[in-house]
Image 1 (tube, rainbow, N blue to C red):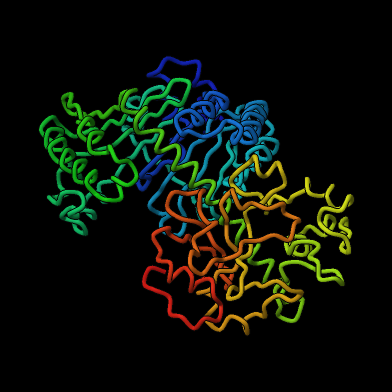
Image 2: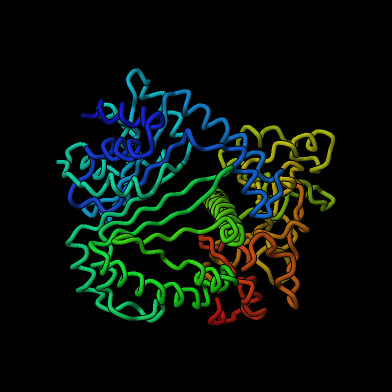
Length: 508
């Protein structure tokens, strides 16, 4: 069975469109049962990394130089994936896996493909490392332990709608098919008989009875398109579904969050009127509409991805700070080490290296010399990834935006001793900012003893610039939070003082 599925998937790209849909349905059929609610398919051979990233740079108004590293990684990964014999990825969502697990991943293996070689290529991507891929017959299975066990023992149930939905999605680079089981419709009606006011209110019955399945087809640059098809049991149900969807789209577009995300979303919602053809509805966005909307989406996704990296790096730095304190009698590192004349030599970022698994780099520094001595200055180019911020140009210069807040009332002051934990933070470790992500104008050479002086009158200076809504900060308890730019100066000032005795405002 698995051999047939792998062969069908590997040969799908040579077939006519209708046959491709059928081949995709049969490739995933061994892992589909009555509780399967969604199946996604991605044809990685259809992805053009250069065209996609050029498009991202154009519509997202991102400098191409910022994407060069990503371009090299994607281009190399896609080439290695296809060279190892990979073509398709399938993702399956099953009610039996919820809420503990999320999706199962299936990678068909054509005859003669080295499964382990393909697995090693996939695991270069962080997501696949977490999926714990393993060989089962002629597929690679991924997911949590319970998901993998279920996929290996699943008793397939024929779902004729699967091939029809794949066909409706079209011969695109990616398809998403949603197949709500009959029980799901009943449960939704019982738990949510009426739509929330944000979606216009009204009965959920036109949705639960009007959608037998949904299919989304997406093509990526250089040719891009989005098409959503909704299958109803009959023409009357399709008309009722259309009548229900129009106010839902308009109500959703009126929500503040939606307008903040895309100010012109109201006009977009009006243009997305479903087209009814007998028992099926279709929503398709034109190139003009996509060119207006997608730049915002791309930029938001780019910022979200960048922010995720920064969150993880701040978490690493905060943890390393605590580990440093554990090794040095509960004291965090000072802003720098000093010579006998009181001159700061090397930043705390250098002295944190042994707690970031960078002992070899730390041993290369001459600790009794300044950061810009002939020897130490050569090491500026070796900035560890954990200090690299969102701006790749600054990273290449060896500059970082991860700085300590300093000042008379801040957690860190000039001098050879860092604050004690938690004795010097009586306001509470969860209420005190430890490390900030500064703006690009305040980026500092990572080895230089330079940080961000906090102005009590203008505590927001030097912060933000990477995300429109605010900035990231690591707190003294080791957590990382996003600080909104709308936060009052009083609250932000209080968050920078570890022993000010203030009560943080409700906007914290």
